[in-house]
Image 1 (cartoon, rainbow, N blue to C red):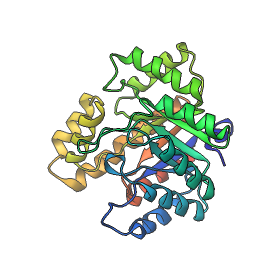
Image 2 (cartoon, rainbow, N blue to C red):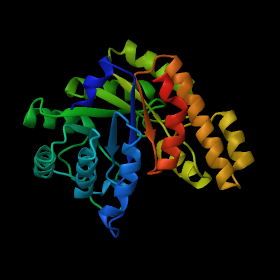
Image 3 (cartoon, one colour):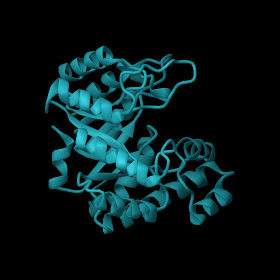
Length: 285
């Protein structure tokens, strides 16, 4: 099933997971997938792991999700791939019955020389469309506060429109902690003529190092309310986890009340966190 078809029927609610590290058996994540699938998300997306180097493990994990009766989307970062690499992955995805791809440029890995077939995610999207027609539903990433590599937010929205025109039929946002930033972003995308569904990406904070790392990577701003939570509970992992879950729930309730197209939870492979949030908001979906 193509996840883009869900938005006409309901508010979409989805999860993200990552594959295990290379030195761990892929089966180590299977119990997590089982627990997450029991929560009945509309789909579960699978990253390529740290630095986008998950390789075939992304397909393995996505295939497992399909076998659990849950729809899935495979991340496909292209910075380290050439056209033949992508063709091979597309064939593998088709073989496993996976119809949804989150097409990304990906982050540069310091010790790997990037390839040059795909300079931008929009190049990858165009290539997938040219190679496969409408066989795949292509999801794009978007950045409510602008991608760090973009000159400014408007330039990033202009690039986002190119992604959509290339063939992305839905978007998932980078994490954010200030809903006002997301609503402002939606207004700007509407003015730019971007009319595909946009899911809001929400990351429940479970430890201080995690959020400091993510903010460094993606540049998300931290509202004063959130900073106070970090200051007050940052020394206590359990308290911060519970406060982070509560903050995420508040964000989601506000987003749903304002008619958001969907909510995508960055679960960090934690069924406990996903279950707490799902239980709190499922009657609102």
